[in-house]
Length: 323
Image 1 (cartoon, rainbow, N blue to C red):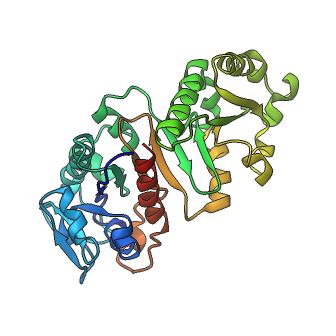
Image 2 (cartoon, helix red, strand yellow; image 1 turned 180 degrees about the horizontal axis):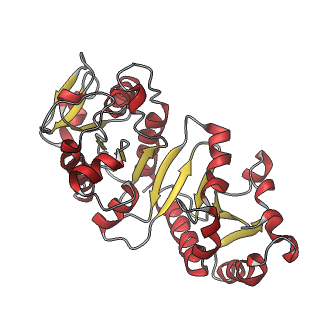
């Protein structure tokens, strides 16, 4: 078990709902899940009870009564609903600071508020598709895995943000093997599951139905899973995806590996839309995030739902204790 340390929460897009839900999350969690926010205090909602801290450890002494803030000075105040390219470098610095503190052992985990990718590209030439790839680059990881998790289900898509027509090209034996390996390691080291059970979905309907609906299962997926089973991986599949997510099936595995984005995200968002948490496995530290975007259209209206961020912070705390 790791020594108690607070969670670092990067600010995300200042013009979005990130600052608002950070305050709502702190109001809900207080000292039950200590975290500190890294950003410009001017971007917090008016009237926020916050306390500027000089180090991560200071969060413990103030979190019961104030939102701990590791303060930055952005180039300008935020205009709600209108991302500014001039904020890009500072948003990136918030993430980099959080990573540095986690890697230095001053924070137990990283939780990231949503970023506005176009603003980062326009203002800082951001060269990454999103947080996940940027964090992998910062930590020198060649491959990481995206997991979506809630109390009811953990899913990992082997391929993510690509066209459906491209999935069968990008889904290679090496990619699937590495995805399974990283998932199994994450379940052991960050979830405290010593012998993780992993179910693997088929690529095709009915897992190919003996070649009648596709050949990938017969050509290589079956053989890959059998080889990994012979090396002590507790795997089942490939399963027809339409029978993998009902309650009785979910009780038989700790995580499901899916072949493409919607195969993984539709079931978890149907089962637990507000409480899904985005987790990056394969990094040398714990990273969670709410499973939604910046929602600039509702920023400042007071209606943003903080549930996914609250769950992301709680998940980070649970994972830190299990690591």
